[in-house]
Image 1 (cartoon, rainbow, N blue to C red):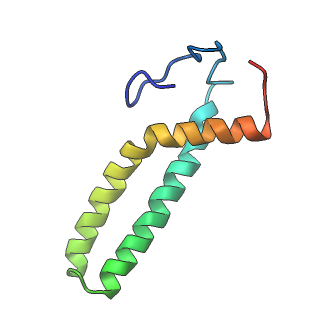
Image 2: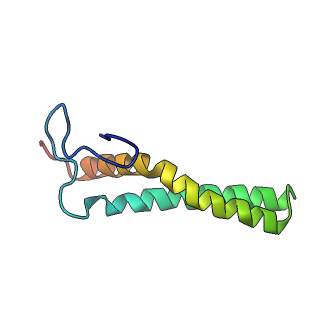
Length: 94
């Protein structure tokens, strides 16, 4: 599905199916990316805060780094999840 971490193929190399159904199709992948990032960040931050692993300022710096790096890491996975979600609810042949 991907040529590299941020660049997708236009169509499937096996069946020729276009990945992007319409312009802006993959904007929905933002929901997956944001949801995963927000849930994990909240859980990690609250755990670290209540167990007093570090001061609040230090935790905030880690949180800022987390919300910048994790969405970039999740980018291809979120797009894949969105494409699969769309295929599950609105199947197409090609």
